[in-house]
Length: 78
Image 1: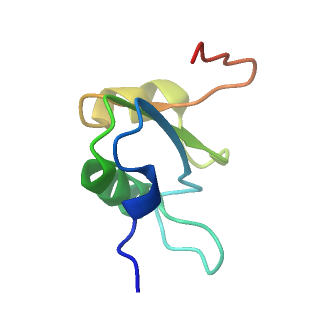
Image 2 (image 1 turned 120 degrees about the vertical axis):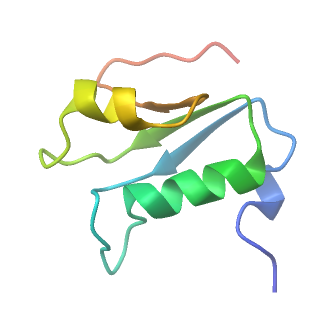
Image 3 (image 1 turned 90 degrees about the vertical axis):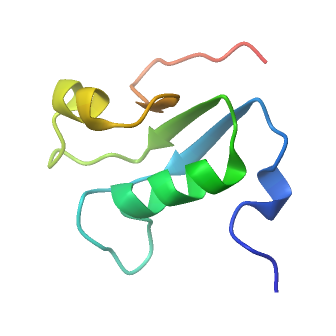
């Protein structure tokens, strides 16, 4: 069985779902997404599918370096 993030290792940018702070049955929580992002080790990771439970500015300030909350209209040049 593959470890989380094996297929994305070596990517420059990763988008992961981080639905909310508490666990969810079909999406990663923010904490789970941060753990996978660290495992992958990409220079930039964007968390998507965020709910209204997380304030964007507060979340951005609390996330580790290189991990950012995505936002509507975000465009990545790859």
